[in-house]
Image 1: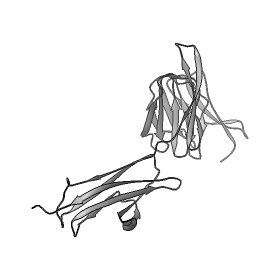
Image 2: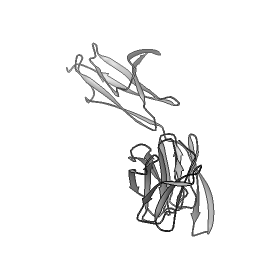
Image 3: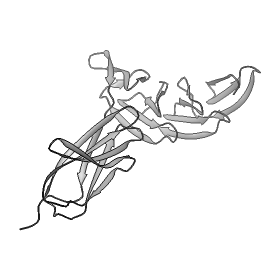
Image 4: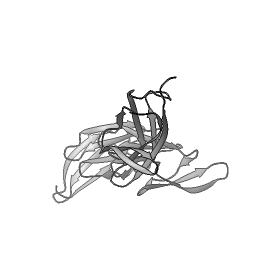
Length: 235
């Protein structure tokens, strides 16, 4: 792709120029004044406008790939954080959107108004906040939330031979893999190798108390959770 420049204008248009030829490649009427400096990845360019919308445009032709209404007007540039777009606005809420689709992945309410672009310092986020009561600003450091929960389809105690489905739910992982195991006397027996399947079906063969665990991992992080499950035939 030739060297290009992308910028907004007071006429509510977003422009893309070929800097080598100094010719206009494409132009999009956004319907509102462009407020932020754009950010771009290999396929799309992202910016905010005065209609509180965050736009994602296709770089090759300027078509709108997706758009998202933010909690408030945003003069702050969106930040590319891996597969996520981070967007702060003149509100207390920081929003994370999936880069390809614009689907919301999470939001954080800081309780104070953002006064800067979010800054991605993997795996953490930095953002400046303003407290009108004290007329002071502060730098907020947000850490990535990693959480794993494990649940069983049957109440305890379950009968030997019954079908029990253990389901894991994970927060903060990218393309997670789930490994299920049983822990007995400090020995771990893996019952379902790491895969994209977030559930495992168990048919207990004997009575007793069993520790069922799940280990969730992605390319960078790993967490696990366990629960004690009681198997006892009715008297």
